[in-house]
Length: 56
Length: 356
Image (cartoon, rainbow over all chains, first blue to last red; front, side):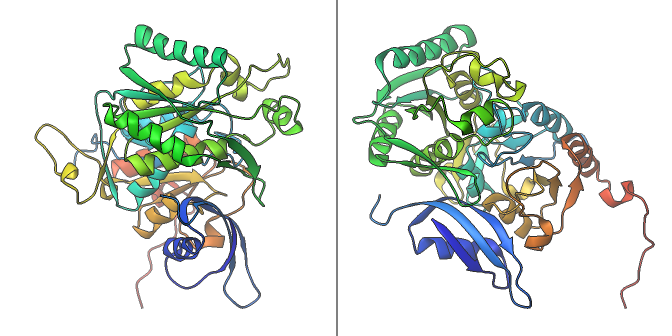
């Protein structure tokens, strides 16, 4: 999974894990790039492997 | 507190991101040994410790697979050091008979020569079908075609009494690839690492046991220009010895709040609250464990260890202690263990300011 996520105030980890859960259960992830925007929040690039929905 | 008391310290060098130190065959092990001496208790993961045929066992080092480390850092798991684990050996049905025999002989060798408690052995019902890939950033990832077969075999081992699991999966051979040539000559990413992490993460998360992985591959032709950092992987037929040794003393993983986590007399556990520092490459601070530690106010030591990523303290808004190498990081850990303010060691030393 490759995600672009706009950073919101507060701790990063819960934001990322919530965004990844839309794709499945996160197994391994990392922020692999941070792009600062001119005046807004920075944009995070997340790479992850998730367990597909329905896998148990 | 007695300054001789250990300062539990996390050392993280993510796998498959091409780190200058720790991106090859257990080539961060000398740094880990130094940090274990400085801290008295180092908690780290297989990528740091695994040198294929080479390994080092140190009672001050706790060997914890990456997803369990993430859960430990998030306060979901406690670690309980043990004298030994009973190792189940999980073999991929996709391994050819001769290569399989080589792995069984490694396990027998570790029983006979090192005294490890190994067995039972289980083979998956179908080949695991591992595939490798690179992410958008160039770091290595991988997929598992038959995750249920992995979990079924792991559950069989657990039911048969295994308390930790070593997995050997058949990985695709690609002896002529440019990426492998670059890795062997010390300038590439470990293409296998991402898939290895996925296998051990999945199994450890589902079974709650220490797990680690060794890939099964055909031997490579001799490379006279082999980088010393990759040499550990070319000394034998398998990468399994380091995994068996690491797991043989890996700590138990106890879910916080479970009956298992109740401390019984004569045992002790390590909780994230006891951790005094986390050490990670300065450009790879965007992983779950580092962020969880930073949220808790645990000092983050960011080490100059070039890699493919550039996700540093400034980009993430983290306050860190900077170290130029792992020897310098060990000095910072020692300062923290002694109760010294690290800022007192640098110059210039700014004057105190009164809060307005």
